[in-house]
Image (cartoon, rainbow, N blue to C red; front, side, top):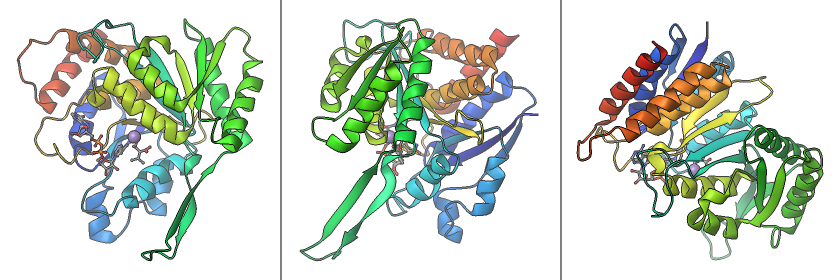
Amino acid sequence: MTRIAVIGGDGIGPEVTAEARKVLDVALPGYEATEYDLGASRYHATGETLPDSVLDELDGHDAILLGAVGDPSVPPGVLERGLLLRLRFAFDQYVNLRPSRLWPGTSGPLADVKPGEIDFVVVREGVEGLYAGAGGSLHKGSSAEIATEESLNTRYGTERVIRDAFERASRRDRRHVTCVHKANVLVHAGDLWRRTFAEVAADYPDVDTDYQHVDAAAMFLVNRPQSFDVIVTDNLFGDILTDIAAAVTGGIGLAASGCVNPDGAHPSMFEPVHGSAPDIAGQGVADPIAAILSVSLLLENLGHNEAATAVGTAVGDELSGRTPGLPLSTSDIGDRVATRVSDILG
Ligand code: NAD
Ligand code: IPM
Ligand code: MN
């Protein structure tokens, strides 16, 4: 029996996760779900973000489905670091996989780009870089205050995520990997990334490569996103670039991700790229497609390829088959995609 842990989290997290669950129910009948009450309300009630006992229980699941965490009532970083990043780090989810497609029926800001022409994946390093938590502050609150945030990059961590990107590229049609960093300024980490990239590339003679500085990559994602196939980059660059990628492919409400532990030693976690969107929470207007596409990534990760493809097809049909002007609520969209998935799978 497949065991899925579900963490709705904060804001629109529980709303979109409920719709993703509807789709999972039809795509993977008979799975066992465990709901975990984590996020702002638990923090206010108990002071806990992620107790060790819960972490241990989560580790016993096959995968985690997460909505979003973060709430204006909690100081910034408490839930983001104490819950979300703690999970990514504890379960060594070093591949943060963020596919971007311009889906049929959607349009991006580029008038001349047609659906199907943008199809790339960002392989974002998930457990190192500026996220590692190294740094601190001195003389806080005084005019002499100093704050540092250090980027941690290891040869081991860099090599394994770059290798994962090459493995993915070698299974894709275009077989191209772009390494994105800022080696012209970040000479220590940038040099490690570029050298490691070149060394790993030598093992994949059938995969083409290039390198871009992150500022140029941000521009190319906007003015020629069709040119990308696989992008491998560090944690913070990947965070920023994938919001840009979402914006050029129909919006953040469609962008899915997987925090993957490729070794399978711990569960991988699937979540929308977006956050808890406090500005629209509770209104039933959040787009659940990102959470639903995260279910597709989850199914693929667990080897349920037919079900994963069915969810992707159902989303494509849903986006291209909409009646212009017909308003759809969060739950309308979940219902419609779930029905389509069940029709496809019979
Ligand atoms: P956000 O992604 O929550 O929202 C940015 C904008 O996108 C908002 O206008 C929001 O309404 C819109 N949006 C997001 N998801 C949408 C959806 N599914 N449908 C329609 N519109 C959607 O980013 P933010 O405002 O920077 O962050 C809000 C909170 O979420 C913060 O606490 C932040 O730390 C947290 N956050 C969590 C995650 C996560 O859990 N993975 C990711 C990003 C941000
Ligand atoms: C994301 C989010 C997280 C990140 C935050 C909330 C820790 O922005 O998943 O993209 O920066 O990775
Ligand atoms: Mn982000």
